[in-house]
Length: 146
View 1 (tube, one colour):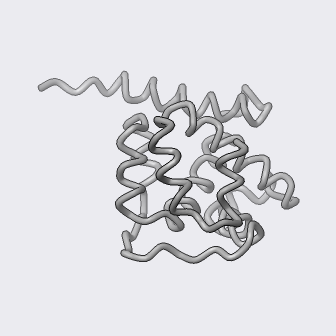
View 2 (spheres, one colour; view 1 turned 90 degrees about the horizontal axis):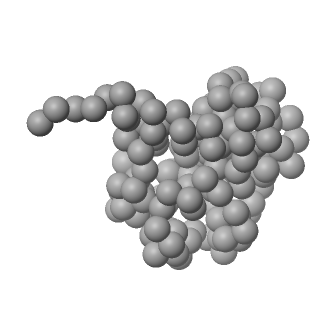
């Protein structure tokens, strides 16, 4: 079986480009990639592992790699009580690489929505419903409104 690494790269770059467009920065794929990583890492720690695995099965190979990079799978997801908790989790996951993009909670909220809109283009509606059902009530509207 031959691997088509060029296709993996092209599919991953296209996904990041979609995020850049959603962020209204179509030429800044560096920014989009950093934000994508931060949102995915914060998100994966709040979704049960089995649901995460079903979700990423539908993503391009390189986006799967971003999702799982550094992941320490645990049976229980971290509890979020408020939208502000998730916003802070995204900031924390982004670290220094996203400080300039996440000056205000509004900017983080818009970044989360941008990533979720792209996820919803690549993941089946049924899987999105399954993921939403595992989220705390405060966070569900984020994915639903994207």
